[in-house]
Image (cartoon, rainbow, N blue to C red; front, side, top):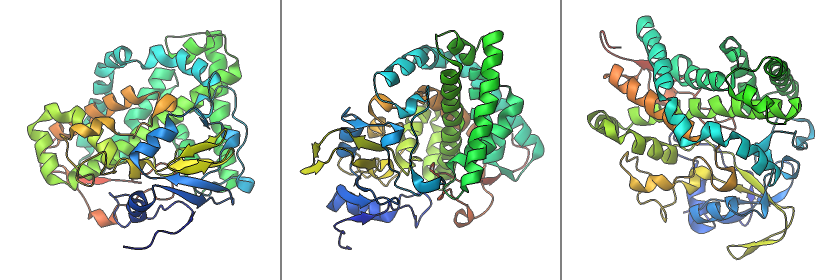
Length: 404
């Protein structure tokens, strides 16, 4: 086994296997789960790779999520690599009490009861997309035909965003998540998202409808606040689910025993979703938190101002928390504790919606296409190594006969 360095230079992102985290992370977790790390901008911070330490950092309010305090573990396409002040309404980059105020406003739209009411509509959208996939015939790219349009349509309907704008939103989001994008392209994508959402907010304020943006315009918020809340929900609401769904299908197709079991026991679908979230964690370049004061952690002192990056893929495969962590087991009860949605006050707002979308899409796909399989070798599948959210760029599928 290689010797662990005294300091890590940059976050390991290169994978030898597309369905396994970067190999150095397991060694770091075993030998030094809290290790100093030099960030691309020269900042001296830390990397956490164990489950317990991940929860400790993410659940501790002494670690801030404010944008202006952050340093990123990967090089971002912005001039100088500096973080800007958090815009009003972008609650995902805030601390209490502002974060609490915005999250509380959203709670009625994302609680378990409200999300369950969306199940028939999600099922209908998935059915329409699979109908189209069957009509077009094999081969089909799962990303284009189901994984991306399904959550895009759902979040657009929930927010009250015209679906005809979804392709532009998808393009802008993809640019913002691309670590190789030019600064100018990222700036244009951000401006495009902002301008479109801002115009829509003005429409909703003048003529409210039965949707989330209209509701927010009636909550004593400025147009700016509603716009940035809408951007946060729109981008996160389709990028994460789209990549998790396509990567989850890829993993199941590469584990035929687990795929066969899920077909035979469809009641395991909710367990399967949690296990796929654990085994195939898509947030591979963070989250990152900044210490607001000196914090003692695992025998080290995190100095005020230093940032700590948490490797969720490493934490979700910690053998001290998950027995046989590298094995995909759709009945794994321990997966209920997975950190794919984060932990603490910043745990994903839309996690119940994501679970519903994943459950419905996987169930319907496997039922409609019993012989579905990869249309090309797994080694040829292009993965999103240079994106802040991991996944696949495309997932070509094929199937037999008159299925669908």
